[in-house]
Length: 143
Image (cartoon, rainbow, N blue to C red; front, side, top):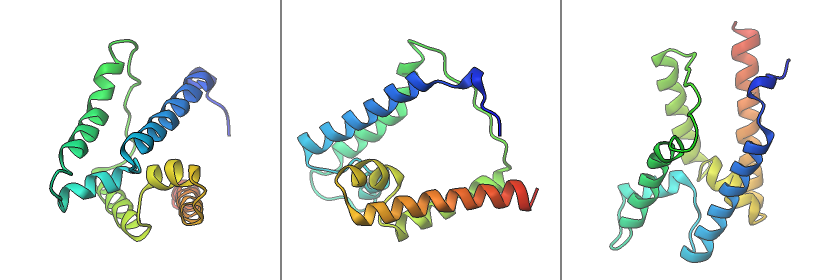
């Protein structure tokens, strides 16, 4: 394995991590909610009175962030090395996993671990191990 030094950005990555941590902490502090994307999106499919506007605003912010970012810096090139079929299957598997795990990587990995949740620790370790095994199988055994 070789490090791609040209694209190695430890300071930008650290700043991004700090911003994510700060945003999730402020979101929990001011709203009393976990900033897990699957839970926020899922709540739109079973709406409760007065619970829809903040969810739409949160998702709109996620979608608008790249356009705001490109005002200050260039966006990285997007390159997808997978077929449409692979992406569809992967998306469905992630969706099933999110339902089985009662949350996604942002909910468990960022928010749950910060709250020292044992369930989130198990979920995050499961997400990571599954990702490692998937990459190994696809790149080394099926290649």
